[in-house]
Length: 157
Image (cartoon, rainbow, N blue to C red):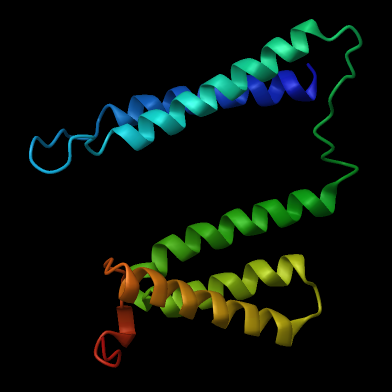
C-alpha cells in the first residue's frame, strides 16, 4: 500500500460515512429551498471524489513507493496527534459547562503549546485573540448562539 492509496481509501470510507450521516438529517419544507442536507452532501461528494482521484492516480503510477505509518521513527509526531485528539475530546465535553470563550481559550493554549513549544506568552496571546475574536464574529456579528457557560451572567450581550 502506498500513501496515496491509503489516503484515497480512507477518504472514500470517511466520505461515505459522512454521506450516510447526512441522509439522517431531517428535511424541513419551510425556509430556504436548499435545505439543511445540501452542504453535507456537497462535502461528502467532494471527499469521495478526491479519494477516488487519489486511488486512480496511485493505480496509474508506474513506480510505487511503499508507505510506512512511521510509528517508531515519528514517535513525537504521533504523541502530539494523540494529545491533540485527547484535548479536543475534553474541549467538547467541557464546552457547555465552561462556555465558548473560556473552553476555547484553554483549548487553544494546549494546541498552541504543542506547536509553539516554549513560547508561553505568544501562546496566551494567540489563544485569547482567537477565542475573543471568534466569539465576537459568531455570537455578536452573525448572531449565532454559542455556549456561555460560567460567564453566562457576566457577559453583557
